[in-house]
Length: 222
Image (cartoon, rainbow, N blue to C red):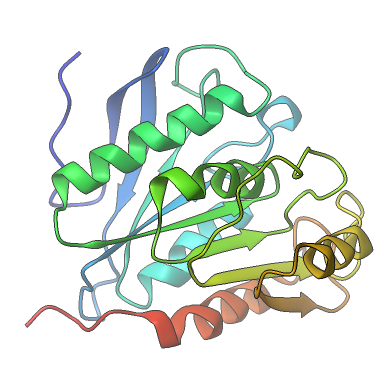
């Protein structure tokens, strides 16, 4: 399989992955904002529970970043959508993310790369962060207590954690306790009255993402 070039317009493409093709969606910044030298990879929730790159939290997060001028990359983990392979309990999914990140860096040299993830995608992006070394990490409802976070090398980049206070899948208190225990300075944003999928709270999520990252944005290309 030939490695594709980075598209000049929003498009879906196929990238060679560790166990076969990976389905990748690239979306360029919104038309009414200046494009920034920044690409953000957004990772989706648990495939075995229906998570894909089309999840509404993933797409809202990506849209929020494009409204600020970023280019976003979403992709389906192995065994999801048109991506080949089988679910690998997070291990292979880290490799999938590293493959996508390496492609972005090869295709967009000199640009900043950030990572974002929702639920299982937050776990994968956190587990991959030490090797990828993103400029910023966004973790939305990181599943503390559901996945093994103890062996993860914690990020040294700016880190934003967004958590719904009425999350019925990820225990919010487990997330708060985990952040207290690890002693790493993360910016925690709590969204009141919000469940795991931010039903009726997607605009609050949008605001949390945009407000959280704004101070870290690079200047627009001259």
